[in-house]
Amino acid sequence: MIDRFDLPDPRRRDFLGGAAMAAGALIAGSSFAQGIEPPQPAKSSPIYGPFKQIDAGVLNIGYVDIGPRDGTPVLLFHGWPYDIHAFAEVAPMLAARGHRVIIPHLRGHGTTRFRSATTARNAQQAALGADGIALMDALGISKAVIAGFDWGARTAAIMAALWPERCRALVSVSGYLIGSQAGNTKPLPPAQELQWWYQFYFATERGQAGYRANTRAFNRQIWQLASPRWAFDDATFERSAVSFDNPDHVAIVIHNYRWRLGLADGERAFDAMEARLAAAPAITIPTITMEGDANGAPHPDASMYRTKFTGRYEHRLISGGIGHNLPQEAPKAFATAVLDASALAV
Image 1 (cartoon, one colour):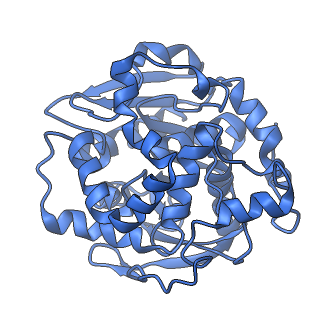
Image 2: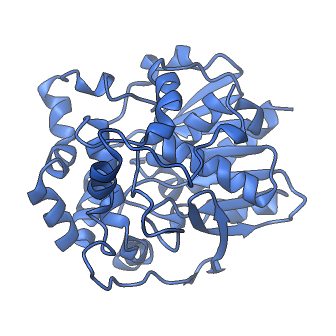
């Protein structure tokens, strides 16, 4: 069992392949490293109002905190290329039912910042899971319901797998998304490889330059491909797109996908955690997994991960042309799943 004291100490960074070389490689993609004065994401939201900020581990995390402070905490984690507005309708539904709802900007998004310019802009899966626990520690939350989609579903699943004593229940869109570098070396059938086109694009320097030059257009295209039947308007996209103006956004996104393919180093401080995750640990806490019937993004069939959940469990297929961004496309269904998962833990 890993507890809060096993989290990597930001004062003791030890990078794979040599400290100086790896640190340079992980930070090189950031606007800071290139001497560029990047756009600054909005510090408030037309939906949530001003964002709160708190030091948590290596980050100063921007987040939303709504609902009664003595309510059962719920942490909601967004994915890429999305932001906290994916939960704009979910959060008030949960707050109205007495939950304290906390929605953080993931590293590289919105107002979340690294506390040091020299910290590696690392987006390996264990780092994001550790961010969730660090946020709970900073807020003094001992246990919470955790839920998310895309990167956020993986983050929540990692927290549930490695820190089950901190997690009351789990809601995960697309199920069990914990992976490993070794597992990602295995080739997939051509149709599945095609779905990962952007991962291979990001593996190239052309892809990194292209994403930096066309971030908004690129991410809008991902929204359209991942949710082909979601008729979002310009205002909805732009409300989230300001979060991509984070100075570390490109570096974090590129590192995440390169790390998955073994093309970028992680941090040695996370080696033990990644070894445990590579063994695909079972998730024992009460869980509801969800899937939209029109998800255009790569995702496993529900039958492939059923055995990974050994506690009280339910899977829900949400119909009506629901794509990858399930909380924003079907907010009532997502909020209901969170409430039901919390009830399973009673």
